[in-house]
Amino acid sequence: MCNAKVIPISSYTLEVFSFDILDQINIPLYASYVSAGFPSPADDYLEDRIDLSKYLVQNPTSTFMMRVKGSSMQNANIHDGDILVIDRSLKATDGLPVVCFLDGEFTVKTFRKTNGKTYLYPANPAYKPIEVTEEMDIRVWGVVVWVLHKPVKL
Image (tube, rainbow, N blue to C red; front, side, top):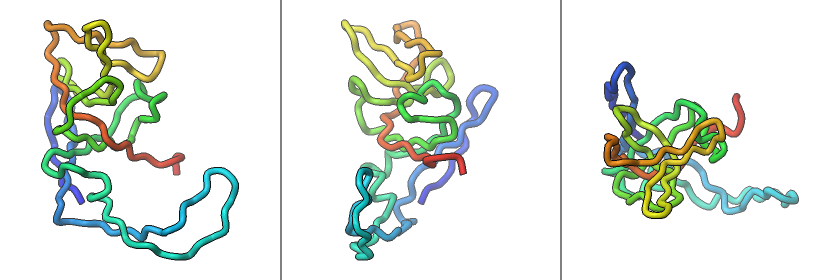
């Protein structure tokens, strides 16, 4: 489904995954929905098979995955160890989670424009927002389109 590319950044390495559209994983997709409220009768009817790369990726040549390290976005349901699906072809707009290359390191934050200023907001009160200034070496690397994680630590 994807190829790993290791990028050396300062004193650590970053593993970036790109999608290979030739390698597909097909998983059964059932026609019935699972209830998140009251239980519903079971339905064993298999509707189709789903190719996860087609489901997760709109722009294969500009879509990559990165693993999260840290807790600054935990209240946005982005946790340490999660895998982010990032589309580099999308434009950062107000309120979207983005991956930025900031002063030689990658970070994931929520992009905000307020009163003509640009900010990168964490989703954890232990961290402060970052006001983007002209003096900073910063590039929005891509927009987070999916967050992949287990519901609990297994």
